[in-house]
Length: 184
Image 1: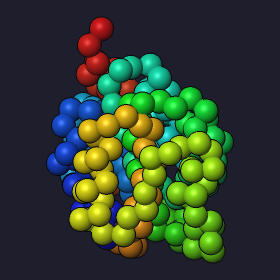
Image 2 (image 1 turned 30 degrees about the vertical axis):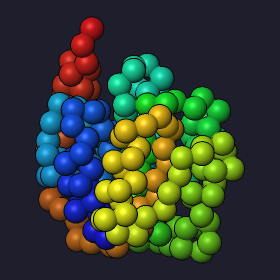
Image 3 (image 1 turned 90 degrees about the vertical axis):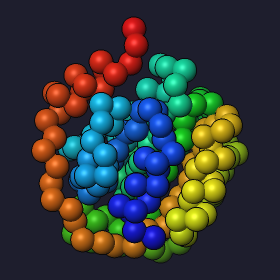
Image 4 (image 1 turned 90 degrees about the horizontal axis):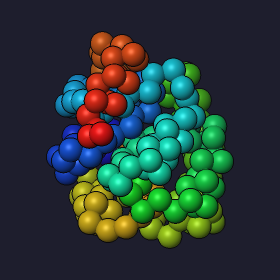
């Protein structure tokens, strides 16, 4: 499955829920799919997307969606353990797994060599997990996650694709827009 099409599918069902996007292509694709105040773009912080989403989830009653990458998540596996420890019922982590560190030169990630992130999540105490390989499976699992308690950890196997144009993101404005999208 292509990450951009999968991102469009997530947006189709996300409603007004806040979405935290991983750096680089994930952020660019989310911006091109639908720029909105509830998108938090994380340029320049490889490995922290799901950590930021976790912090948001424990700070609000709203359901929070993290669009992370396998390479970034592998750089901070402790976040999976912390999600398992904290058990935020309002967190959905979607991991775009193309089995490489795409942003740094297309090196194979550990998932290309046998690391199973869904099993890692299960071993950390996250009981709602799935690995999906196409849009239909992603839609079924994601809609189920939206309707129930989490945390959810969904590994979506994606294909390498062309990069989209870099989105015109200004970190300060992203934070300003995003903060103001929450009611006081």
